[in-house]
Image (cartoon, rainbow, N blue to C red):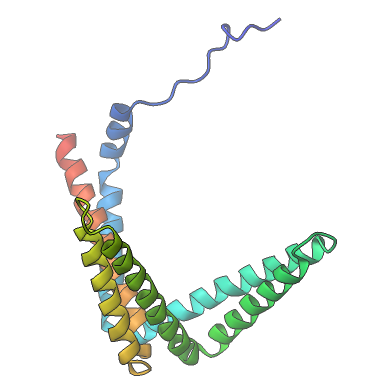
Length: 194
């Protein structure tokens, strides 16, 4: 009979071991950072193309998600929620196909929805801050809410003119921040290796 003491469970690597392993791969972080910075600069130089690429990518994900919901609904027809899953899947599929085949109009619609979402989230955060403003640290929630609300209003006020570049700009900024993060992490790991 095999006793669990004969085969002890494998030990997890310690944080120090993980850091040693990461330090050995510092060059990969630097390389990834440089590539992402270049992609971010390319997206910043071509925000319209980056916007279209973002919309087509999101639309493709929506098509896959909608098809998955429809398959789920039809495989479980007898279960409660069949109608909900079917309608939800059809909406996702239709919106995804619209975004893929009409990315300019899809960008316009997504920009409007994005602005509305920021307005709603900003208003909610501001309301939460207002109800808790006497508590310590809640000022940051108020600032966050006000800024989110302001950005949402700016996006909605400039719609549809900003639809051609807003998602490309957000993609470029995200790539640049991720690139700098990976690059700086790689350089810190390189110094720690010494």
